[in-house]
Length: 179
Ligand SMILES: Cc1cc2nc3c(=O)[nH]c(=O)nc-3n(C[C@H](O)[C@H](O)[C@H](O)COP(=O)(O)O)c2cc1C
Figure 1 (cartoon, rainbow, N blue to C red):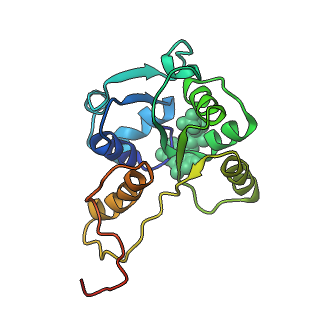
Figure 2: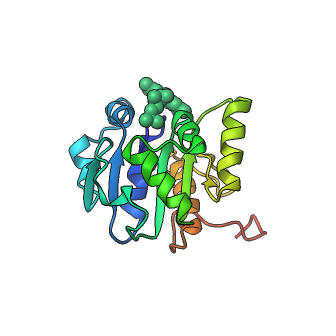
């Protein structure tokens, strides 16, 4: 999790993704958590099987040889996007993304910024061309969400679909609005 608005996206992913989960939060991600949610840092960390600090370059995910299935940066700042696009790996999060990309691992960036300038768009394009999947935190409204939770869960449901995980968080479009 990096320091963009949308801590809840990282939390919901930790709650919904199956399997073993490794969590790293940037300094600003930790600071934003209590501003946007009622979760404490301890409660969020308890959702993961392992927690590493963003300055811990000795963590397993800082090596490309460490095997895992998918990497989400959720939420993902444009500052981190810029680092990833330039191949800078001076934090655990940026190093893990660098490794995931070079290993051709599924790498999802749940970016959140608006509006986006040309620098941000060019960085995202560069990453997309290098295999990253840019998942803007951008809900659809065809399932007629009634609550903020349903809006969030549309985004998380799409993340689960993309990661190959069965999901029931939202009803996918089936071509007919009356069913
Ligand atoms: C309350 C708050 C909300 C922020 N929201 C965003 C955001 O939505 N998107 C973004 O790119 N940066 C946002 N920022 C700025 C980043 O936190 C800042 O650029 C930071 O250096 C990113 O570092 P990190 O990517 O290591 O977490 C926000 C900062 C604060 C304090």
